[in-house]
Image (cartoon, rainbow, N blue to C red):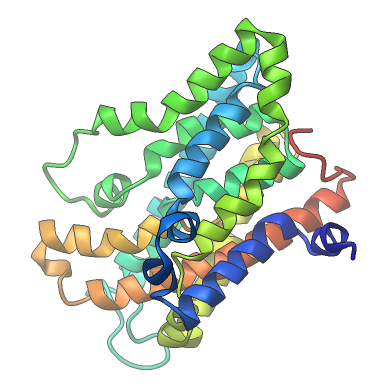
Length: 320
């Protein structure tokens, strides 16, 4: 039936099609996983465990000699992402003195929504795309980029006082599976070969699980403004990250792969409103807009990355 070949004809198909199917299932039958439970429910809600295994397997393919490269690449992408959010926050605050727009087509748009959508990269999407189009060392760069996860940098960008401490346990937890994989792969080449074969196999499974956490109805709720905001996130942050990647010696694929909005970014507005009540009135709308960006960027980033990879002549071999 050539199912695999058909899926791979779609840019980033092994990621985007399972993700879309998961989103459709969750939108039409949101209680499906809970109803059947057991392994079916686990498959629909198990993105994090599957990603943890993916990190170990991908880590096994990374040579420890490349560690300086990982730190440099991850630092460049992290810095470019945060800088983009900060610059946009400054510009938006000048255009929106009150911090949000309360009338017209852009009603509901806020500095909070813009920064939250820009600051946090969809790690699963980045890992999948880099596993398909990038270098294995670039996959490891997310261990550094994971610092952006959660509300910390958004809070810092917005200038909220008293949030200077970063939970080191979260950072260690994010990189530990990758480090374990790196150690195992460098201690035993046969183990590296064994684990590395699982990398492309795991991609559609965690993509489906990620999709099961999305609701396509959020696009309707967010309306055209949310869709345009998602396109802007890819266009603006993608351009900056592509340039940053190329300036650091890359080919731009890692930069474009990071031009997305993470699913947990949708929780950032509420987290910030809980700390600073001045954001309470804009947090609900910001949440909807950021949630829309999650879906829009999850669709656009694989397409744009695949297009760029084809343009520069890079094949779609996992961990090439």
